[in-house]
Image (cartoon, rainbow, N blue to C red; front, side, top):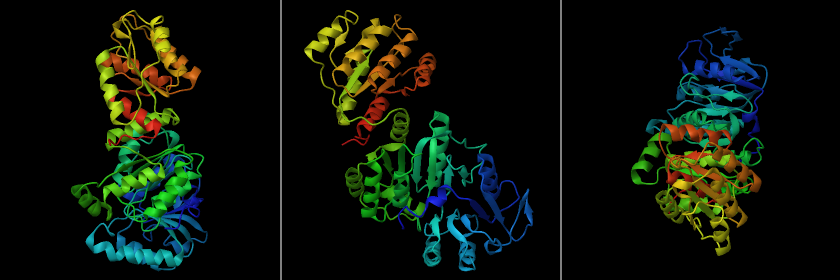
Length: 457
């Protein structure tokens, strides 16, 4: 590991070589070549394969040594042993390599190959992402080395989320999910076995990256704990970092070892490291999606006071329980606030916290309840809209948006239900308010904004 500062070229390469390039559709190297064209990469592409003189409209070179110019990034799509053979040769014009190939330490026979790879690149001063990875998807610099066709996995729009992951399949999964949810991506790095570049290197880079608003980490193992905590702390001082840790039990740890050769370690050590570094840990894939959704919409808050507003009492009780489990504060409103609300809400409304607007809820009563909470120092409002009350109209979306913008505090919408409810939920999303379909998901999102995370104590 060589932390961060000399890997910027990976994210803005002026040239990319594809070693093992092929003109045959369906071949991994051909998919990568096509993806670079589709995303609009505007640097120079060098296909490398001694079998061909041209691939499409591009000149094809016999070897890296035949290219007279410096190559910022060489993408290797070859069997592991051939990668070693090429790098052993006269390769002196490559700054960085992305080694897609598997067959290294994740397999018993490949451990010695990975050690040999490490020795070669250290001597030649080549930075390496991989092996056993997908490399980089970068919506900012328009780079896509993922060997998955765009027809099968949709690419997300440009946005503020950057993702660091040991797992290539997770990178593909979350990319497709974020595209479907309309959440924008800045950069994704799938670094696999991390023979060189690791999560600490990437965090160092992302901490200074203006395109990245928040970071998601998928972690199987961390080899250098102290360096990781230092770089993560630097990053969390500037932007939120959320993490999902897998391989916590024996079965998961065994799977991680066979997946990327991860060494693992006791989960309690990771939890302590996350806490020390200010990383927000999420529990499971659903918690991860909730975190991305809410951080795409809002900035972090400085307190933990949550106001719960519903138009049905039972769901408010469920939310209050979930808030307590995740360390959020569901404090009662003051007597003065309750008196004020009583004059503005339907007659049978409960003016405690949760506030229950009952089946008589109106557009204006939602506005009044949220405003009273924000005036009295609540940091977040979790607002349930069940759409049952006949007095409620689509105008409630504008009223809630109005009060949210007036006080510049986050409103998290919980709107469980069927077809009609989901159709109405899209109106909130069009105004930039995230909608969650269960009370637990809405509370998890609130916990992320406070920095508490969604891992139960």
